[in-house]
Image (cartoon, rainbow, N blue to C red; front, side):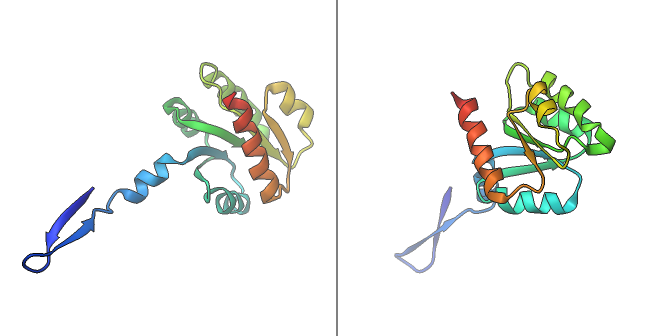
Length: 148
């Protein structure tokens, strides 16, 4: 939206209304939910992902289920070791919440949980530390697979 503001008689100056432009652009990006409570990991994920994605970071179950119920998520990155392993319970709750509109879940953990993650329906399981390139590549792969 732009407004025209006269600057001198006979001339006009176009001025763009930028008050909501940044928010509008951010909202058009693909939304990724990161469920993680390690601050260094959160900083790394944000730095890597915010170039291309709108990143939402949460760590408590009620907030996670609220944001999922609002819809619009394209992928979830989950650390199942949250709260002494209660992240697995959260993973089950997420799977139930997205049953009608599936959202791929990428499990990123220090634990060797590949078998458990895949049995529970994870789109991918990555062992920490996860390289930024590997995280981006995996996100793109699961989004592509989910879009077919």
